[in-house]
Amino acid sequence: MLIQKTLPTEPATRVNFDLSQDEEMLKAVAERFVADRYDGERRRAALCQPTGFCADNWTLLGDLGLIAMAFDAESGGLSASATDLAIVFEALGHGLVVEPLIEAILVAGKIFESHAAPALKQEWMDDLVNGKRRLALAHREARSRGNPAWVETHAIHTVDGWRLSGTKQMVRAGVGADALIVSARTSGAFGDAEGIMLFLVAANASGMTSTPYRVIDGTVACEISLHDVATEPLGAGLSAIMNAESKANIARCAEAVGIMEMLFATTIDYLRTRTQFGVPLGSFQALQHRMVAQYAVIEQARSLLYLAVMSGGDAIAGARAFICDASVTLGHEMIQLHGGMGVTDELIIGHGHKRLMMLSRYPEAAAVALDDYARISARF
Image (tube, rainbow, N blue to C red; front, side):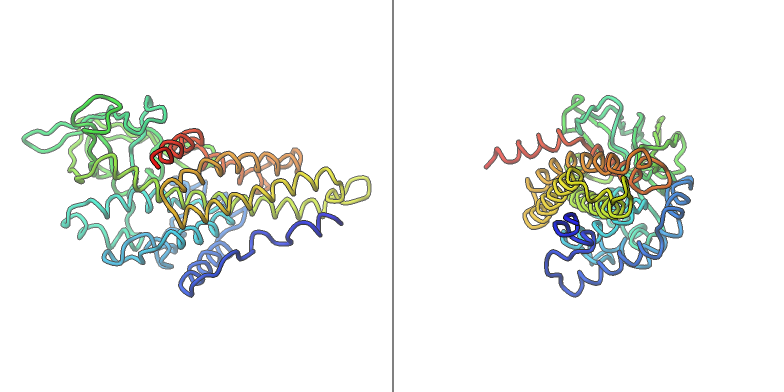
């Protein structure tokens, strides 16, 4: 059939560039984790947990060094490069892994590592690197509407120390976290990047309440309410969040590419085995054209991911702007090619599309990433 001649047999396992020995090892570890720990039934069971992921899997990720890879060697980590992140998260995307490595490690963990006082780091870093303790970032607010500088939660310095009051929404990986990194305004007007500080708040702090809820991909987020909560500053501001999110966007792009590859490969298998009018669906030229078009999109997404890995900066924003839109469109196509069964809980197609929706909307939408890319590029 034409579809067998024009498309790769196993696009999700194709090696696209030369890897060092260490990178090959990281890739193999991530792929083995997916193979041993993930199938449809176990993934659904993990999502049903109160935290939205499996605690045993999190412990195993710590034992395997996939948590440590994001931290610097001085902190006991592996000092992973952007290439390492892309390799690992593309492999994790193939399995639709639900453990919150991006939110807890690449964002909250890296902010803490970079800006916490030495005494705090001595208390926390070993457990963070090993996966025994976990942090989450509480930054988004109801009226921010995509503006990261819109922070209404306020901090007041009293004789007894700093106190926080306000409400944070969409705190990813916040349920079950040992502490939260909370952004709050100490001065300035809403929407002003100046005057925003980050604070560390213990999960059991008096005056803080957490309301968990499910988001589109089945994972758990929460809303945090703070009422005169005692806290301590981390000595960082909004730029710390933006820098961490930029590096985390490499992992988000890589995960999205991995999911796109997985959905494409699954749909190829379906078209080759499902028959209609006595012939496989893959023999129909109209469906072949649609699959070839999406194969080209995956290649574009992968190329932009590689550019982001090598160049950083505006290339990351550009890759995210393209992949956010392209991945959701691909998900729509793969669902349509499966028909109504594409959205059933039994098939991985709908689950992958929901995860792509989450990655394309959080922490900002594709349009915001495109604006960032245009603004950064205009400087040169």
